[in-house]
Length: 220
Image (cartoon, rainbow, N blue to C red):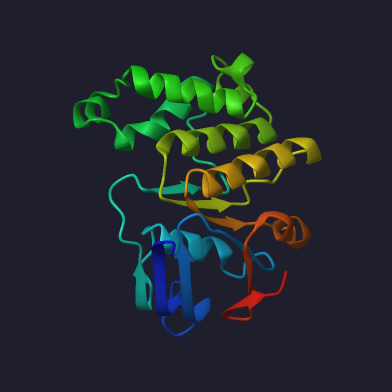
């Protein structure tokens, strides 16, 4: 039986107790599972991910992800990349939370982290861009950098907010294969927000839809 990496019990999620975006959320996510979150814009998908990532506290109930430092990976919609720095620099930064403390404090990655970064950059087909600043990349290329950064981090739980946006069909298929590999071979639990429910249904193990203020599982 797979290990549970996230347990949400009777949680209200949002910013005000009088009008939570989501009410009475219950969710269990296992290692190696890909869970898709769908719903209209502005309904609370991003807020749910930010709550799981411990960036926002729940209004009520429990959100329990018993993980250590660096074990939760988060790809926000705006990606959080350092735009004046290179592709290589941004990807290496993803691995520093799990590096020895002195490397993290001094931002001096060791040989293993550098090699892992090169492999991740190659996996998203950006080896020729490794020395290019993020500001010179297209939106789709920047999303690939964010994926590579998360691969280097080696999270136990990965939260991806619209990580397939701005990608052409072929590139999106390649990123989906990487997500599936992370889950099935790396045993990473992955929660993906996707605006395309048809696409999400092709690679997610479960689909959850936000309707009104409720999170409901839908058939795929």
